[in-house]
Image 1 (cartoon, one colour):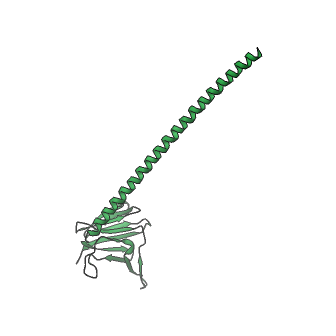
Image 2 (cartoon, one colour; image 1 turned 180 degrees about the vertical axis):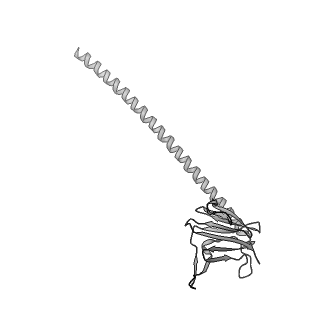
Image 3 (spheres, helix red, strand yellow; image 1 turned 135 degrees about the horizontal axis):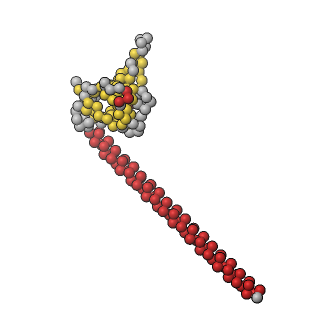
Length: 191
């Protein structure tokens, strides 16, 4: 009788352990499937992001190549407080300027009310002034941070936040840089 009771208890314990083992195996298998699904999703998202970055890089490369061939049709002047700077469409050697000019590369000149003269560069976010196919338009492009731009006559809160803006001949625009400094830009027909 004790032997039968021990045997029945052994069978019950074996059955319980088998059921617990199967439930545990099923839960682990379910967790592995979830982890595999999450990893597959992350892998696809990463591949999609890499593909988009590559497409953007290729698009920028093509645009930069096109930009190098575009000729400036306008000179432009930059104003920043009491200082000014600019860029001519024709270089000193008589050739036409092509491509783009970084805002950081434009030397600004100013005169303090005390009479002291000063020069500096606007060191900011990599904003470029670019030639276009339209000889009466220039582009202002930021590769990094958006900037705010508005036409003369509009109030400061009526600006448009963008990374790319067209500026037309003989219209003054105001650009608010990431540093919150405001510069003016005006494109004029080259001489």
